Image (cartoon, rainbow, N blue to C red; front, side):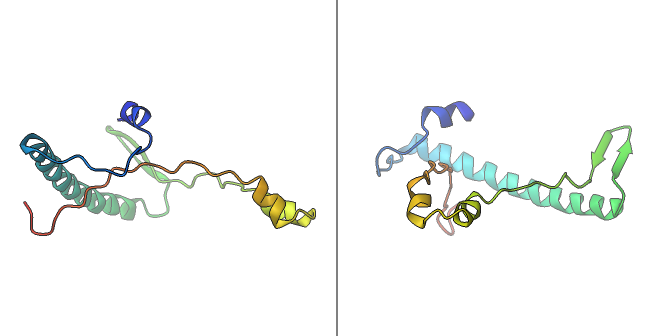
Amino acid sequence: MGSLKRLYPTAKVEDYVEADEELSSLVAIYKGDCQDLKIAEDRCAVTKAALISTIADKSGIIGEFGRIDFCNNKPSKVIDWQLIARELGASQELITKYTKEKQGARPFKFYPKKGSK
């Protein structure tokens, strides 16, 4: 999937591909796979919650399967460069001048019609 995202990083035109029978069939397979995945993810979430309840305030679970960790990550530190710049006397115009816009993600989202199978 990563190579496809590199190949098509942005939508170049605001236009849609008209679905033919083959493409509609592929979308139906995708929809079914997504529904199966949702069921599996829901089941996985219930199992994960049971495991976390068992771990409680311990660090994890160890067994012949390997190990499950449920530890805290190291805290992260964030520097508020805008606040530093203002404290040093930078104007909003100067901050805006050096603010860069990054290209947003191009998520693949599926919106099935209600009641469609």
